Length: 290
Image 1 (cartoon, rainbow, N blue to C red):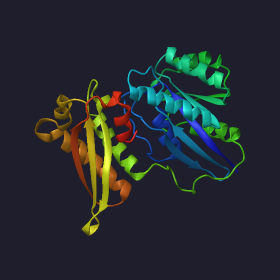
Image 2: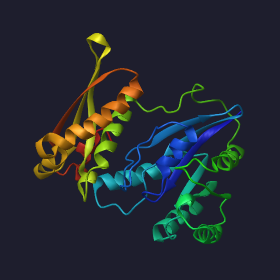
Image 3: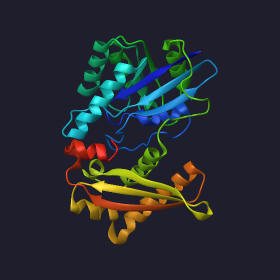
């Protein structure tokens, strides 16, 4: 039996979370076209007869502008230091840029074993994919795999490459387990995902969700209480929407996914509060569960 931890890294919005979800066959990480959607290291578990791969989805490496941004980069660095292998994700629909080259340089310096994934090939011209593979090939990493995480295409070659890189060892999690995320964290992320899809400009970065209570009540209904934190009073109205429309719409969509997750009817209580400039205050970042 082979087992180990695989760090999934790349620039923001290259499809790291979509790839982890596709590999484990279940939604363990939220997805959004917004950069910096992932704010914690999320573990997705793939168990096969011959191996157990623990994929660690990381926030996108970027140039930090806030205390939160600095913390996200530290999370990535810490994950790389502990990984048995690394999946470096590129976006086939964009040219390789300075951010990609910076990450490639860090991975080469670290000496870790890296497999490069060229993602989103379903949305890119064949010539563009070939150009990316040729340019990335100069980095001389272990292997290069073009695939589509969204469509689940060509995942098997990636898994085979990674299994061959892992050391022999025990299984870390029971078969059938797809994530070790606490229930409250996963619920909070599902809620945040529904708002990210509806918000514009800087507001997605200013939103944090903290689940403050999960309680089963009479009749099997589960009451979930969550606080939506924003940085300014003006943002509070945007989250709520005209006549509470956005809060109801996003909340209803989130409730449906939480019910599927818990296998029970859910009463979702969402409350919006202002936590002034929380992204720049390390103490508040910790209190908000990040």
